[in-house]
Each structure stands twice: as structure tokens, then as C-alpha cells.
Image (tube, rainbow, N blue to C red; front, side, top):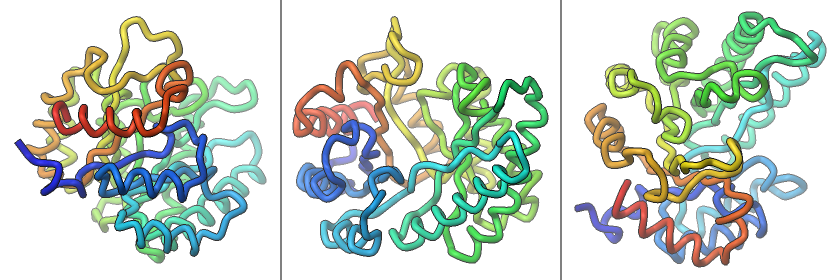
Length: 283
């Protein structure tokens, strides 16, 4: 089994796991002490702060930034708002570049303003990602499409399977320039009977930019903010890990847990220690 000492760089903390309760510097220092090698801040963690100073703090702590979360939704009810969303994503890409982030995570959005035009929403996403690609390449920050569970199709994401995300990559980036890929989040994808084949497909084109772990609780009390700690639910985490390794993915394993009534209520040190234990044993 891989040891923590030799492979701490493989352990990544998404700051949402601690519920955004503490300043980013405190989270960075705690993660570094516990043995994480990477961190994934959310844009909300950076609001009103000097990104340059925070980037320096992260580097000084010895951590890598393996992603920046997350994009402004692409579908909007008017052309003016769509343009504003695109410009906001371009600014976020500039922030990601300052942080030295390995990628910028795209949670793409879906229906707006009472619309029922799901196909139209998907086209808006593809148009927006296509326009954003040049900025991503210029800044050297790849875009990571993150498909979300179909439960989110009405509002948070019209991109719902890994196969769909890979098809969009092929359509928008047929030459595979290296600036468009996918994030594999087990919470959103574990149920899909085609997941193993799609992970293999992603690996063949070197499209896997991120790998997120948590667990699906039964019962689940809230479909967004009741994710489980690894090992507390029904996802075959070792099995999916084998698939991504077989596909050639060697990047960080990122813990991302939204848990408003459980883990966000616990002591942050305890949460980090539990994450380390579960990740090294199960993920």
C-alpha cells in the first residue's frame, strides 16, 4: 500500500470539506501539518483578499493548488448576462493562473428564468466553453468539465455523465490541445454503469484533470449538502480508484465533502485527521 510519507502529494483538500469556516491561511497551514500535498480553494475563499499574497502563503506551506473551484454558470437568460458570465470566468482563470492552479473546474449551470430548453442550455455551455478555451491556453490553465449527478440537471448542471463530458471535449477540442479535460467526482458518477468504460476512454486521450472522493449515504438527507465521509456510504471507492489508475491518472486524490449537518459541525482538526485516515485506507 502506498504510504502517506511517500505520497502526501497525492492527497488534496478541497476547502469546502471544512465548510468555509476559517480563513484560507488557517486551512492551508492545517492541511500542510496533517500531510496533504495539495489544496483546492473556492473563489469565495479569495474574495476581498490579495490573491498574490495567498498564492505565496500556499507555496510557502509546501502545497500545490491542483484546481480552483468553480466557474460562473454559462447559461443565462439574456445575451448581456451570458457575456458577463463569460468575462467573470475569464477573470477567474486569471486568478487560477496567479495561484498556479493545475486546472479551473467548470460546474456549468443549466436552465434559467423558467426555461425548459435543456438543449439550448447545453448549447450555451458549449459556446461559452469554446470561447473560454483561448483564454485558458493563453494563461496555461486547463479547463476541467465536471459532470454532476442528474438530480442537478434542472438548475446546477446540464452536464450529467462522464461520457457526455468526453463527447463535449471531442467536439470543442478535437485536436486535444491539452487545455480541456474532465473531473471525475465519484459522488456524481458512481451510479453510472458505463463509468469504467468512460474512465478508460478519458485516459486514452489524457483528459482526466481531477479525481474527487466522498461517499453516497443511504439515506441521503440532502442531495447537495449531505455527502458522506469515505467509507460511510455505498460507493465502491477502491474499485473506482483502480479504474482511474488503470486509465493512467497519477494526480491528486481530492476530498470534497459538503456536509452541513455533520462534518461541517465538527472540529476542523478531527475532520482533517479522518480524511487522511479514510483516504489512505480506502482511496
